Amino acid sequence: MNTIKLTDVELVALAVLFEGQNEISCESRANDDAYPNGRPQSPEEIILDKISAKVSALLWNPKNKINVGKILTQLRK
Image (cartoon, rainbow, N blue to C red):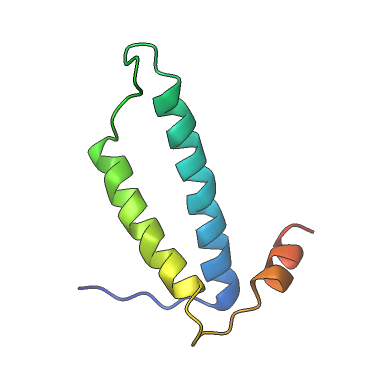
């Protein structure tokens, strides 16, 4: 297992990145005309979803007390 250390700002930015990527993937799968019921997730999308879930769990862990709103405001300036 590998470990990565992130600041609160980096963790929030990573969560925002994953959120955007997940939205793009969902739209892409839903709009794929070759699959009337939506394209299934690719192996890469499945892995990204698993990593995204871990990032979200860290971000919203009550022990961390990260001020997400304040950080998002700073990132979007």
